[in-house]
Amino acid sequence: VGSEMCIRDSNRAEAANVHITVADKVIQAFQQSGRSVTVKQDYQLTEEDLADPGIELILSLGGDGTFLKTASMIRNRHMPILGVNTDP
Image (cartoon, rainbow, N blue to C red; front, side):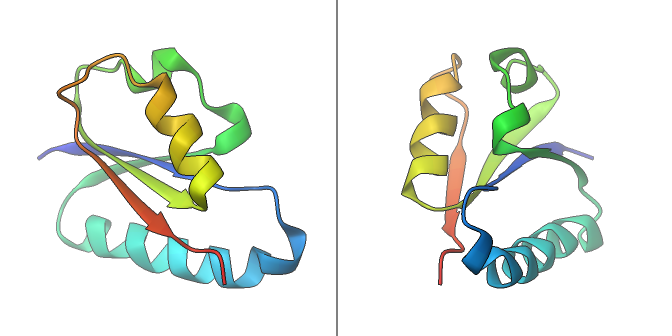
């Protein structure tokens, strides 16, 4: 069973409900498929989190800024990253 790291955008209070709903659905879909999912808020994310050798895919849930921040922290250039824009 693989492992994913999810990063959630925490910036925009007015979009919080839509963001949380979409992010929760994406996370649940991965969990229901038998995947192990670790969730981090974007402001809690460190390069060490993304260097975990057990991670097979990084999901960035938020807006453009969340994706760009996440992508800039990945040192393994072969690591797949999937961005899901949850901004309404």
